[in-house]
Image 1: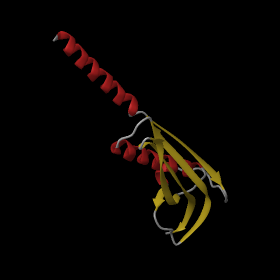
Image 2: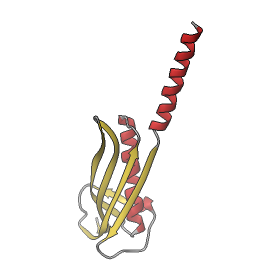
Image 3: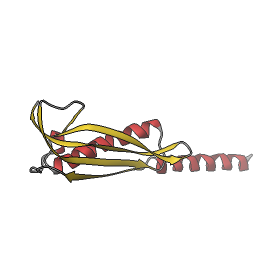
Image 4: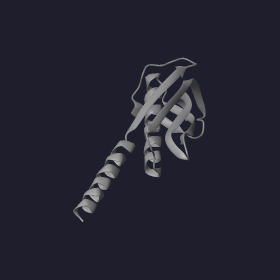
Length: 129
């Protein structure tokens, strides 16, 4: 009986430790200036836009990847939020106050498992909304 309890406790420990490692996320991003860069701004001032404003200037492209060693639906949503935050950071570095046409792609690890999310969009300076 004691041996059975020991193995149950060991199994719980292994599963718990696995969940801690699985939920570790990382994020990285990049930008490429294709127009005229502007002075850097705060990422809080960068808007994610689903439709183009009335008047804007294209500054470049931004991309970000959020990854994890294993993902549940909750981790996937968290990674997507992290990617949006990194897109804002990258846009802010090149002086863009908006990111337009953001697309997301799931990164598959094989066997039906998702290991991350990539997002990319066009960094713009909004002249008139």
